[in-house]
Image 1 (spheres, rainbow, N blue to C red):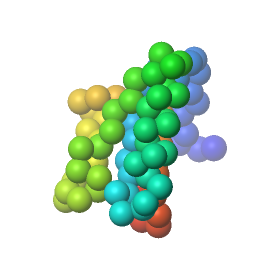
Image 2 (cartoon, rainbow, N blue to C red):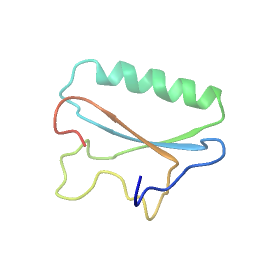
Image 3 (spheres, rainbow, N blue to C red):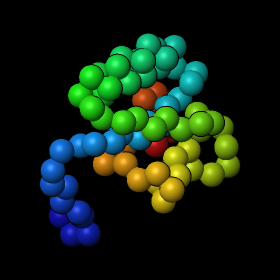
Image 4 (cartoon, one colour):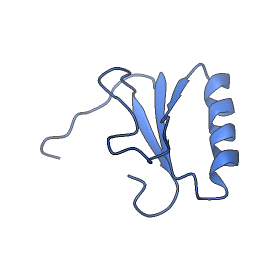
Length: 76
């Protein structure tokens, strides 16, 4: 793929963006955080659940290895 970056090494941090109106999101987020903690992986969850005008995660301030989007259409 042109313009892509290949990731190497273990995942040490996960960023999570989500759609709070999706009923299952709270339970899924809790399970994801528990799983990550059990594997020594830190999680950073967006503060405003996509309500703000800007991005939900400040990846310059808190870089992550992987971003997971939970929710419906338009979450990303």
